[in-house]
Length: 288
Image (cartoon, rainbow, N blue to C red; front, side, top):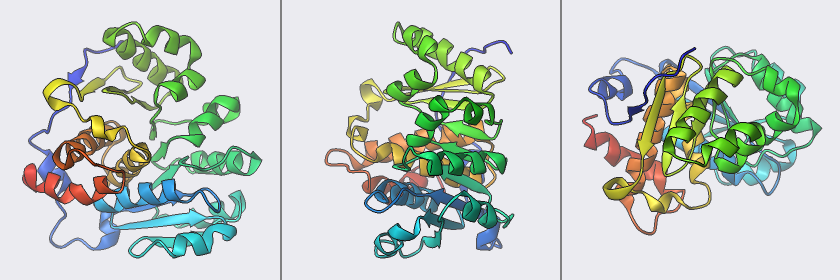
């Protein structure tokens, strides 16, 4: 598909209606997100993602952990639910629940055969899915996983992850903002899904050629996002928006703007845990 001129991401007039919860809606009407976690000692990234999904308005969020990590995760969770995922077979059984409306996999997941099988199971469900961090490395290492990507997927690479997935395009992307846009558009067409190429200038592209830019520079800079775990929160926020039924390209755009605006409003001293907790004031700022 031909590339389109990129749009600058800014709050749209319909966002409040899209994000506002309906007065007569119960929790399942606002979606159920499942975040797949890494093992013991590595649940923090997925817990950050799950918190982001819950704060952005998903009606329910569940964290899926290996049995060895259950106690660690349970001691840190309250509103977020918990299930045991021993392996891909257990995940497949849980995905029989069609109320699970969006999935997130990758933050501190791990890179072994078990984790590759989990990614394959997630992709095989064809649900709206955010793939981040270790899931992106697994996509790069296993061509069969890359081939299983579909149009409801959102990939959220930083430059290093983008280079692992698309080494030829990454070489071109460093030349200029226009080159980064072109590389992201080509990556979206090659993968058949949404690519969110993170950075101070974040580029979001769809296979159709639709492209958007979020510029966190100059007066709109959000340098406090350069902190461990902020990308995990972004992955979770987009997952929560997908769970609520927002289409992947728009969910990526809205999530990116909310993420940066939360950092701008909080300011110096931000850590990843602060981002979800700042979302209520961002929602009020845009009239929700």
